[in-house]
Structures are given as C-alpha cells and as structure tokens.
Amino acid sequence: MLSQKLQDAFNTQINKELYSEYLYLSMAAYCYNLDLDGFANFFIVQTQEEHFHAMKMFNFVTDCNGKVILKPIAGPEVDFKSIIEVFEKTLAHEQFITKSINELMDLAVKESDHASASLLKWFVDEQVEEEATDSKLLSKLKLINGEGHGMLMLDAELATRVFTPPAAA
Ligand code: FEO
Image (cartoon, rainbow, N blue to C red):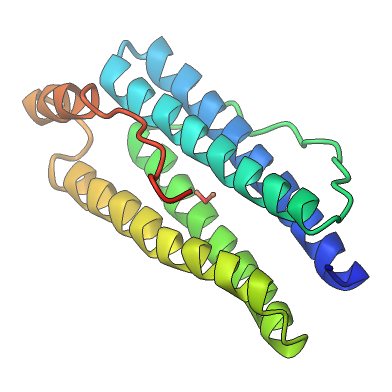
C-alpha cells in the first residue's frame, strides 16, 4: 500500500515521463525536418523508452492498489537552433529527471517503503545510462561542430538504434 504522499509523487513522475515522451517526439520532428532521419530515429526510440518508463510506474501504482491520476501534459518546445542545442537540452532534461527520481527515492527511503525503493533503484540505474548516452552524443557533435561528413556518419549510426524492452521489466 502506497502512502498518499508517495502515490502523489509517483503520479507526478508519470506525468514527467509522459512529458519526456512528448519532448522527444518534438525533437524527432525537428530532425525529420532537417532530413536527419537517423537522429529522428534516435528520438523516436527515446519516446518508446519514455513511454515504457511511464508504464512501469503506472503498473507499479496499480499493483500497489494505488490510484493513477493522469495530469495534463505540457506542450514541448518546438523550435531549436541546432542539433547541438537539441542535445544540450536533452542532457539538461535528463539531469532534471535524475534529480526528480532521486527525490522520489529519498521519499521512499524516508517512509521505509522497500517496494517503492526497489522499483526506483531500476530508475536510478537507468538515469546513469541515459545521461551517459546523451553526454557522449553531445561530445561527438561538438567534435564535428554539428556539420559536414561527420554528421552523416553519426546520422547513419543513429539510424540503427532499436527499442528493446528490458527483459526483467
Ligand atoms: Fe524516463 Fe529519460 O528518463
């Protein structure tokens, strides 16, 4: 049984994960408009990951006999200056999500809710991976200054990304 406070916090986090899905869909549209289909694919796969994150929490709340309360999803940013800016914003957004997950974990620990803490451990680990991926891509983009032949190579590499739901989920 979830406390009211934890239930509220999970519902807020579900909203943030769904907003992340929406934000990355907007970034995918921006990339498609530049004919960078590989970059767009990277963000489409990211939307699938974010949807998975939201559903993982959705299922947890319902499994705990809690009540999922869906809130309005804010409109994402739609105009970006460059691909480099897109990845700067992606990394900043993931750092914001990491902070949010950490606060949720702090609450679970404070309430000695071991089931919530166990679920959140998966998210803590996932955020390390998400930030590392975005940080590496941002570094590579800066190395090639977001232009030229390097961009085409990176675009081809990102076109191969596929969504694989984690087995133990
Ligand atoms: Fe659901 Fe990208 O964190």
